[in-house]
Each structure stands twice: as structure tokens, then as C-alpha cells.
Image (cartoon, rainbow, N blue to C red):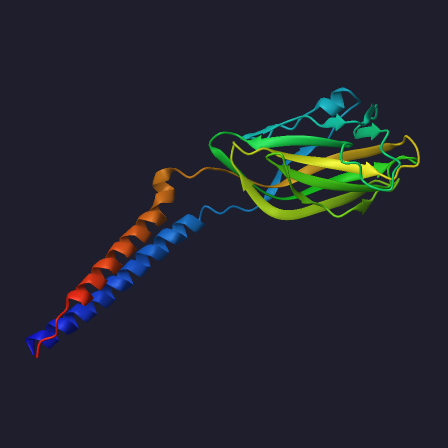
Length: 235
């Protein structure tokens, strides 16, 4: 009888401990989830005024480092309130060596989460009729947008890519391509905005709560298995 009572007490104690551990783990995980933030516009290139001042204007968001827009194998065009470039390929396919771009990274102690890019674009009558955007991460093409038509009327475009996160050791670059021009005309960009979130990297003490809960749970399960293995029923 005493052996049976002891066995029942062990059973009820195990249930109580298991319930308590589940509450602790849920509490710790819930605290970690509380760090989640909603995406928003991190920065926007607006190119105010005339060149070269407008082209050289760089947004200054908190906790991020950005470059100015740059041109690769296309020419600068003086234009007010827009980033305009000429002499795009007249070929029917994209030239990977012709693009305009900008780069950025989070500052030390912060991490960035990216989800989309939006921009206004148009062309002159002989400018490139087709465009595309690529997202590069640490020098590697991470994802490309679908090809889009570039018209002579200013229009808004959005590139929703696979969400990606990075630290200060990670560099990001967006490249804008244009092709199928009918002459040496221009491709114009304006209001280039990146959507995401910039957050402090959690302190080890905060991020370790979930790990600590998991380690406690593993230890309890091992002890519980050890007790069950060592249990010798009495007759």
C-alpha cells in the first residue's frame, strides 16, 4: 500500500511540475515575441532640387548608414527633383553592367528586417522601355523583381521581396536596370523608399530567457526519465 501511495504522489508531483514548467516556458516565449515590431518606411530618397546637389542628397535615418545613388556605365542628366540617367542599352535584353544603385547597412548594435521597395519612375521618349530591380545582399543577388514597363508618365512601382534580416556585418544594395531604349533618352527615379524595421539587438540576458527555460525543461525531463528508469515496483 505504501508503495502504491508513493507512486501516486510521484505521479501527481510530476503533473504539477510539468504544468508549472509549461507556464514558465510560455511566459518566457511570450516575452520574446513582444520584441516583434511592425514594418514601416525606413528611409526615402527624394532628390530635392537640381543636380548635382539633388543627386548627392542622402537620407539620414537613425541607426543606419546609407550611400548616395550611383551610376554604373550610364550618364548623369541634369534634372530637378529626380535622379535621371541616359544612354541605356538599346538591346532587347537587360545589360547586367548598366544600372543605378544605392547601398546601406544597419549600424553596430542594430539589426534590420526588410520587406519591400517602392519608387516612382518614368522615361523620356527615347529612354528605356523595360526595367527591373535587383536586391543584393553581401555582394550576391538575393532576389529580382519582375520586369516592368517604363512609360513617359510618372508611375509608382512596388517590389515585394522575400523578407530578409541583417546585422552591421551585412551590406544591402538595390540595383535599377533599364533596356530596350530607342535612343539615348533618360530613365528617371524619384521617391525611392525602403520598408522594414530597425531594432536593437537584444541583450544576451533578454535573449537568454527562452534558452534558460528550454535548459530547465530539458533537465527536468532527464531527471524524470531517470526516476522512471530507476523505479522498481514492489509486490
